[in-house]
Length: 256
Ligand SMILES: [Zn+2]
Picture 1 (spheres, rainbow, N blue to C red):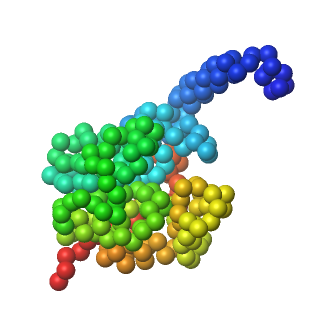
Picture 2 (cartoon, rainbow, N blue to C red):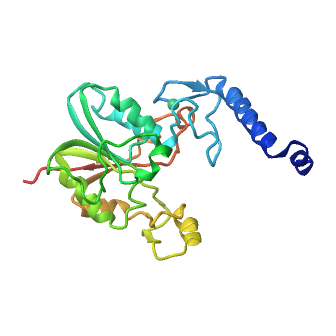
Picture 3 (tube, helix red, strand yellow):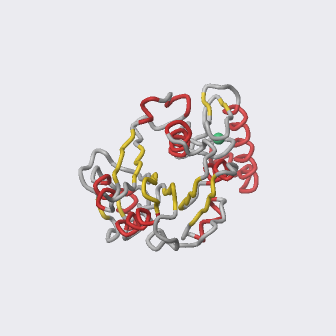
């Protein structure tokens, strides 16, 4: 049936058909209120598929991990309470960027090294810099956000130390990564073939797959690490969250 269809409608026709299918799917998924995106506030019967079912918000394009970080900041910290904050956000996710930018009390700066990916992520960073060489003085920021970056950074220990350095005493960073809780140790994949990297680390550009020692790596950079299982207090189904995703809250405690 598919091959007959291909022959009949041709390439342009197939493109148009896919567009019609996508808009029909969006219209169907868009109805209802079984799920809610806490970032943009929209409700749907389910989120759109994104390599898996029920993942991507129709409105702000958030995924599970963005919604969890947002809910944590909103409900478990004073981030959005209107206090004056110096915030640095590495590799800013557009959905989080757009909502943080609206808060006038937050002096929000973004940074990214991957300038070639700007079109894809939709945010022009304020600063083009590497997390391993942050162009700010010690003790500058109240909060640093850096999610799903260190899988791509060869010297992650240096990057973690840099975030620690630019945080103010009693400041904190949220440093999320894809952590395989079934593995004791991180697997470095940079010397493997692209195919093996994809298999082990989930993407060919990733240089490692973190295991349960991820927390120790953050601790080694100087942080006091709180691994929050806040997701267990939330309605994961309603907000479209991964029910086993931890949040790594990394505190810079003042020296005695
Ligand atoms: Zn949304």
